[in-house]
Length: 299
Image 1 (cartoon, rainbow, N blue to C red):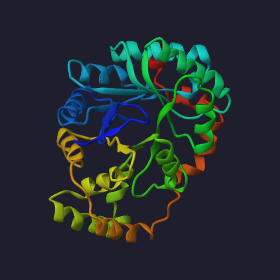
Image 2: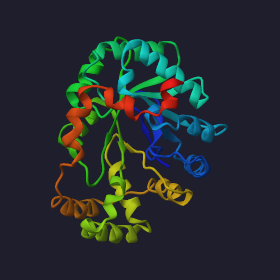
Image 3: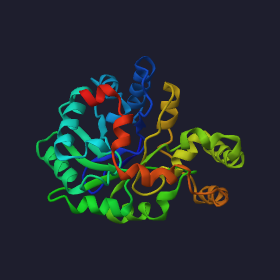
Image 4: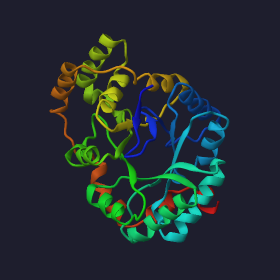
């Protein structure tokens, strides 16, 4: 497993971690998480909104060198709510400190100054080690960063894959220039990459993979992590998939192969349907309260 620097810190994280969205079956997903970690994907990402922090915490218990990340939901962005939410996440995860605590989505109904001051307080108290955000555009990122007095935002977790490349318009270059780690979630486009609609792209990925002894999924992940400052957190449906994902690291697509992939990407529409709803999601945090499991809200 290869590692990359986290933001402008001295910390290094594996370029392939594991995302846990929709992981709710403890019997199955505990094995998946432990397998991923044992094969080098020690960056484990969850969120209070996922409703699985307790399961994730139990899965990684006793494992060494785990870099644990979680997120606070937008409806908890007021100062006191951020503090309370973090304490609840610590309890559910069964840890004394969170390695990376992230704002899950922007919430334009709460002053970002209030939220960031709470994040800085949590770091001062030693409850979190690093501050991150998720789904922030450049303007939102700079606004949040400007409210920090003594710390920096080290990462931005965004959707990024061969099929969803909106971040390439501005955010990818911004992160590279400012030494901010870009964490790619849904790096395999939630499986859409392997649908009939993209059969020609899949065929090209298969051919490239064959030359390296890799699968199409591994080629797609390697395409992402070949970019400076980008790490990916794919989900795995079973232990073998976790191993496959981890083995996307440690080798490199050639420049010619990158060009071949680019040829197919030029024919694909870049605007995902989800981007239509993004402004609505950022308007307030009401929706996140409805989506966050009841046990998380009451913890």
